[in-house]
Image (cartoon, rainbow, N blue to C red):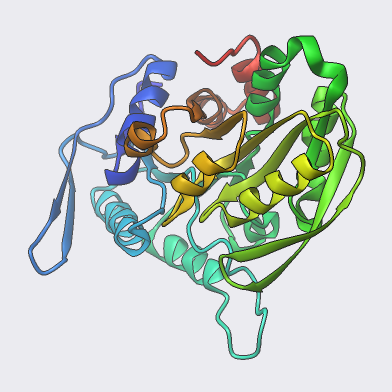
Length: 324
């Protein structure tokens, strides 16, 4: 992979380092400057002429700054004659705006896809998109990797003595497929929480479909933002007799009161991945467990560069992986 270079942008520096460690290569040198008026300047310090460039950047908070930084980095690499520009976006911001839920609303996920393509991206890779149909917003290759295998592997070792008691819980009807995939990996049944959302970032659990009495419940969602869904879900599961409740997600956004809510929820453990850097949150919530998606993303880069099977690379990346 001597013709490949990986750059870390502001939001994903630690993850990019882990990816390079997995690949056995050094991280590329890139300068990122934020001026007093908010303007951003991105300048690759290593030559990218004729190279396959990988830009690692999650577009989490501050969403617009991180997105703009990525767009500018793409433009810089394009003008420096990079052969391909591949955007690794572990957490894809604006994914929740994937359709017109009400009249006159934008489809911002499509707008972001258009911006990335127009800037010069050759490929986009994400982890657990909120809505998988967003892949269809691109006219360039777009890969979406599932972190379910990492999560399943973790719980297989964590609850090895109680695997027959596990039930996987979806916090809403929309996440039933995600819950089913984890349940199949754990050979467990599923349950579904019937909830309503009166307004954005507010969720109320209403009913429970399935049996959790005497069970170890694992609530799985793609993202946890303010943790309102998790908090009400944990309360309902315990009221229905769950002996232990875990919560897991791919993207720990953890905005506003989320950490306090998770601490007070009575969870056995909260498990997420490092698609969003959790360094600061771990200081406030050391009971949180963070799984690394670096092996998956390194497998993706390797498969692209060697023109080999992505599914085989992902299986190899997860095989034998046990979180520390």
